[in-house]
Image (cartoon, rainbow, N blue to C red; front, side):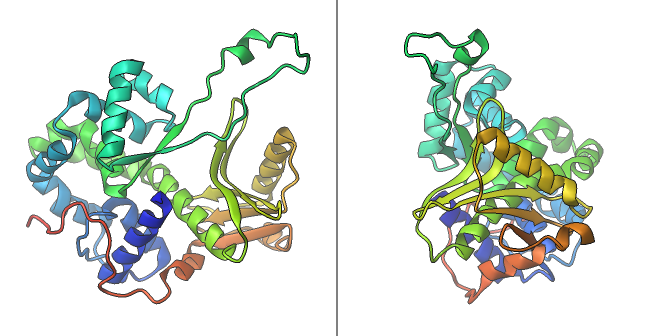
Length: 317
């Protein structure tokens, strides 16, 4: 359901703004996605953020407070989820919340439609001996679900704006701008990962997908693990960086598969800036490579008036 909403927002953003290329589409969508605004994507990102968001901080902040009932626990949890590893228990710790007030805030935010839980697919550890005991560090490991934001802009707000709120409210933007320039690629990576799963599953649309999403356990994290009814396994990693992905990345993914004791039908790598010549030569049945341009497939037959869920329909200046 969440991925369908994200795809609707992605298509709607394109229909409103028609960016010049997919790299621009993904980067600008990661910030403004879900707002329902027309954005001039020929302008620099920093200029647009300053003009549309920073200079309208008080107005937007009031609308965000309306969504969260200005509840401090909700705000602290959203910030912790935005900047952390998305795991619920670690977000509670980062936000200074316990299972009771953290769980209450989490439930409210889910009901409000601002976040959605991504359930872990990790199996509980068991001893091979029916009467045996697990090692202490294994027994103490807690399986934790993760959280995804339903609108990219909400995550952007709690990732970048909230930590600099006092300065921004005073019209001082320097610290925010420096922070954004340093961490923009890292921030965009999650949206790229979510869109990559959508594209992978779109290309597998003739198969019946049984399970899809990120995978994590105590030892391994994989961006995307998709399993089809005919028992095919697709393992994917996503790299939103300013350099080409080389063969060592493929080897790292193979090592992860060995740790999980699985033999994937195909390894898939999504890259912002493409791949080294050495890696490109290995593309085939066992390895598929996608760049930003391949996301055009998600925008076929986009209509200007496609319905989508919007946070704020009108810009504030």
